[in-house]
Every structure is written in structure tokens, then in C-alpha cells.
Length: 118
Image (tube, rainbow, N blue to C red; front, side, top):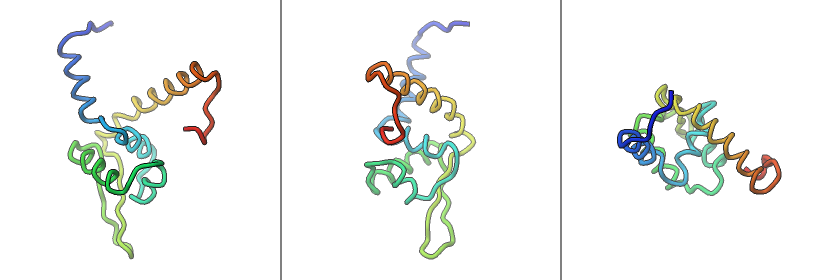
């Protein structure tokens, strides 16, 4: 069944983009798709994100109920993040974006991206 483009769909896309906008949120969600991660591990995984920006983006994702934050009783104290059940509903979208991105890079550059390039 094909859904026609309508104001309701455009509004839904805008709502989604408002939640996921920014340079880092989709990457954070993608990093958390398969396992929970400590803050420091997330920062290492996502090249170029500052501590301040990562913290801010994680807070936004937590407000939107996509991510949960758990303070671990370790010395020193560390914090772990994971997707909520609701956040995991984005996994298929993230996988589709990755597949599209790989195909797009092949189309534009003529080669399959290597791990180091992603």
C-alpha cells in the first residue's frame, strides 16, 4: 500500500528530524544499537565529538526517552548508556541508513567503503 505524501506525513518527518537533528545523535544511536556503552567508550567510538557535546546530545536523547543513563558504582564512578526499548525501534532505520550510505558512497566514489573510512 502506497501512502501519499500529505501534511500529516510531512509533520511526522519534521518531528523525527527535530528529535534526531544535529551532527551526533544518529551516530550515538547507531553506536548504542548493539550494546550499552560507557561514556568514555562512546566518545572513543564517535570520532570528533567533544565531551560537552556528547553529554548534551545524550541528555536530549534521554529526554526523548531513547536512551537511559545508569551510574555505575565503580571507582572512579562511570556512567553507562543504552537504548531504551523505544530507542531500539530506530535500529532498523539506522541499518537502512547504513546500507543506503554504503551504496551511495559506492555510487559516488566507485568503491566500497573500508572500516577506516566510516
